[in-house]
View 1 (cartoon, rainbow, N blue to C red):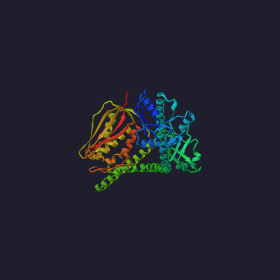
View 2: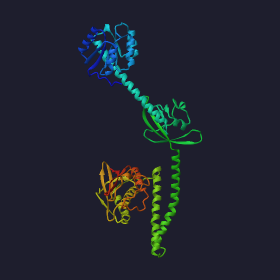
View 3: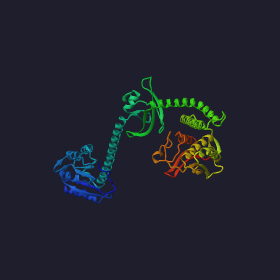
Length: 478
């Protein structure tokens, strides 16, 4: 299909006319035209035109219907059948509007009766024909693109494992794919033109429950997006069957809840009892026995931490974790967290140093959760720091937020692991790192807590130089 013809450029015209005098008249009119520029190339027969047009560089054809080798509307038919994709203006000596109208119906852009021609009429007809041709060409291109797009959409949706429903702004169904028919146990004919009973906010996943047989329910995860459907605004709803996943999640939550609560009580009792034995409250014990009891004590503490972490994850994900918000100075909280974790860092011969303090800076936070976040970052840094090294804790302002940073000089985080660092149970073993009882939940919990406190968490890392974890919380302004 020819690209859009620019009326500001020189318009290249092929004049198909066997009358020399009339051809000369048209040539003069176009040469002295006050609007637009024109170049005219003339041929005197249909055959000559057929030989010239395939070479291109023609914007419009002025076609006489009466030529030596053809006559009447058959002349136009021959040009149309050749599909040269160029606008045609008919020149007819017949003082007959019917012939002109028939020419338009066959595909001509306009017609001029020879006896009525003048410069103004000729120029207006040429410009009108090109504008009309441009509009029709654009419509054809858009229609073709739309048809191709809809065909691709049809192929994709029919093969898609998700149910897909397209509704208009009145929620009237315009399209469903085979998966939707199966999920709802309704044929496309029963859907199309009917109101769709479910809705979803744009960009938000919504769970809906449907029952196709009146007994068994299916849970569908629904997403809605705005689209154009047959050149009109519409809503594309994608519905994924998540019944099995939801059942597994429910079972997992129940197991975690039962196991965690059943374990935590006895485990606390075991830890307290072992602590009494180690401290000699039950009498002296042989040194080898004491070492074995200390191992049991450390592993019991590790199991208790894991149990508490799993309960925290469950509470956060279910929205059941309570936050006690208070306006507090940030520096005392940081100092409290550092002091609470010095003994842990001492196990690895690692020091903790605070620098870049901001006195009187305040945040609105839950103090216990803040210390929990910072504790996770400090213990993580201690495990990956070289012996006799130090962890640096600093505070800075960052666009209305307070940034708390924890820097270590460990091996850094491998590039292939960085996108999973905040995932649950994410762990990696690096050369020189001492993995001491890590559950792989600390960073995941920290991320959830920071986001619940209205902030964000991130990190910067370099191989063999170390890692800085930081979290930003809104600074409280009086």
